[in-house]
Length: 109
Image (cartoon, rainbow, N blue to C red):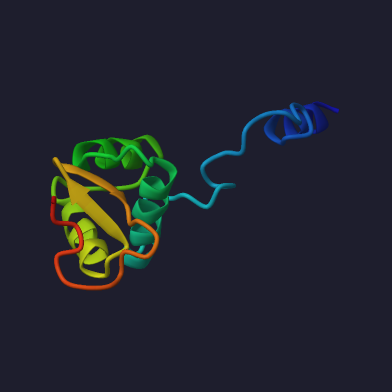
């Protein structure tokens, strides 16, 4: 009986409205680089007003992803090079639709 109570307390049966754990969401400390890139891409897509690199790093730490001081910069440069994001004023934004043509598409005019 005690085992069943402990099991129920440890599972979502005890609290069906509990938010999923980090493990259930698929987040772990040891992300592959491709998975971290998807994480950053998703974060930027969720924040149309832009994110600074330190905000991205802090959100990753909150989600228990192992990061170092240089964490977002190589990923941000890769995504910027692929025209998937844009940079303005130190913040990174989702790329605008139809902005994949031409050179210097993110230059201020």
